[in-house]
Image (cartoon, rainbow, N blue to C red; front, side, top):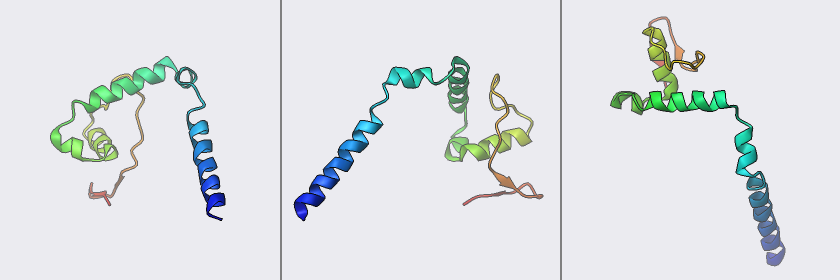
Length: 95
């Protein structure tokens, strides 16, 4: 029974590894458009400008805060929806 469980576990691990690494990186890279890659780069650059306090916050709260102050998150990136829930008193619910 132990040998059967060990063989089953080994087969599952091997299957996971094969499926995970079966797609060559070149194919995965082609799946993203140049525009999307440029937008992601812009988002990462913008994140590097965050204050120390903003870096401790969830990105949705930072986005919501900047939008409420009329600041654009990133130039050249369409407006992103925030998942932050804000009540009428301008307080955000956080967990």
